[in-house]
Length: 240
Image 1 (cartoon, helix red, strand yellow):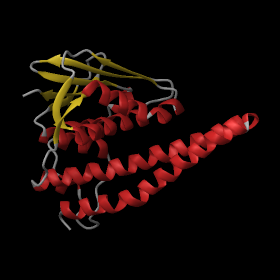
Image 2 (spheres, helix red, strand yellow):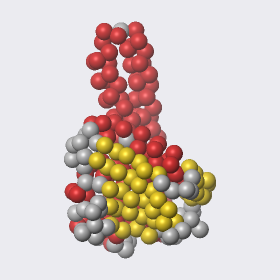
Image 3 (cartoon, one colour):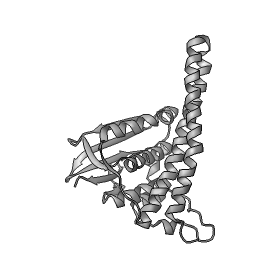
Image 4 (cartoon, helix red, strand yellow):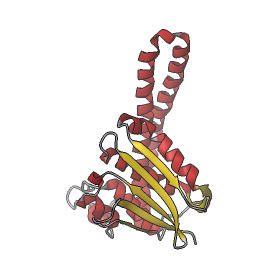
């Protein structure tokens, strides 16, 4: 099996959305019921808040599964040359903040200090919102997972040579050879498929998708050299 067809991956992504979406819906309904119970039984608020936290974790983890499968669906479509961008005008500052907010449970669990510095004069841009959302969410999810407890994680957006420069100043543990290569190398999904097993080789899945998506968007991307302080993963979105 040298290559998994994009149509097959797209169908798998579609089929997974229903059961995973149901899990998210029921977790949300449980959270609403728990809120009512907290109002009715304030003496049990501590125990009920724990249950509410678990429901929130189910929702977030479920959304991560959907995002992962959708990311690979797009990656295969891009490589097969059948991907079509669905452009719309999006507010980048709001999009970044919404991605950070959605990851709040994971951020709080590790007591991370996440900050967003939007220093660009460009409030919005025309692009595929879902793809941009997946790019940001994949990066943030990975860097949260790599960060030690209580670590800072800084996202900076600035104007740069007619484009928008995104920098992720992250934990030193993220700058290992595998992840740097996954983000910076010219990649082909076909080369990441084990010939006999027909499965993706392990390592840097999130960064591989982001790499492929940024290439499709004609966005430069890379990692600062080792002597840079502070060091970052970065990409530059073209504005024209």
